Amino acid sequence: MDDVNTGQYRTMSLLPVLAASVPELLGSSWAQLGTVLIATVAIYGTVILAGRIMGLRSFAKMTAFDFAATVATGSILASASVGSVPLASGVTAIACLFTVQWLVAKVRRNTSAKSVIDNRPLLLAKDGQLLTDNMASASIHADDIRAKMRQTGITRREDLAYVVLESSGDVSVIGRDSEVEDWLMEDVSKDPTREVDRS
Image (cartoon, rainbow, N blue to C red; front, side):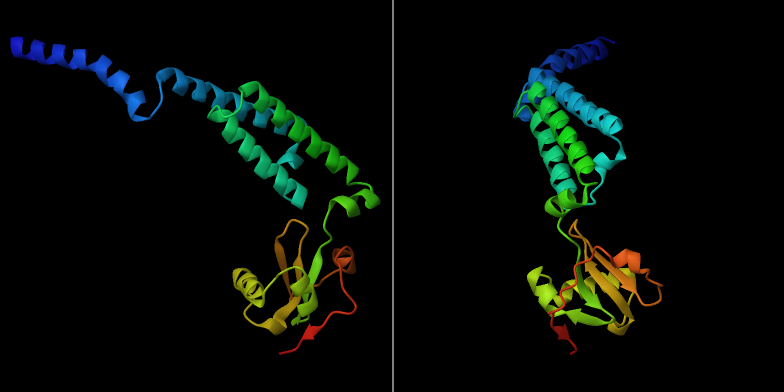
């Protein structure tokens, strides 16, 4: 019985030592770890709250601006979580970023403003033919289109109706088995002087 009590006593006496050594092993302190925990929860809550207030559009990646805002949000969240910037600064930055994104989304309803803010979608291929001038201007290689064809299950180039580089940087592939309404392609840039690759 004495041996058991001695063992328990030794274990209990080691706990404070272990508790003190864990932060050292992590290169931090319990106070710093607690600060990170609080900051992470607070900044994450701010992002969720801002998204609820501003709407689902806040998390969309429909344009290059949306993508930039998403990357900036992630950077701010990470910096504020680990204490690289004060928590109040991080919360303020998140609020400003979401507000600017919301304002830009409203301004984009104006056609003139939209043309300034957004890149226009670019036609890369039509009816199975690659538009090499457009591809070159967008730094898109034929291999990129092949990869997108494989992802969408199109196995022959002649089965392509359209390939479009969207404003967000994504590539959309539409097969000939789909009936394409003219409205769908109205905002897509089509260079009339483009060179057609027939090889």
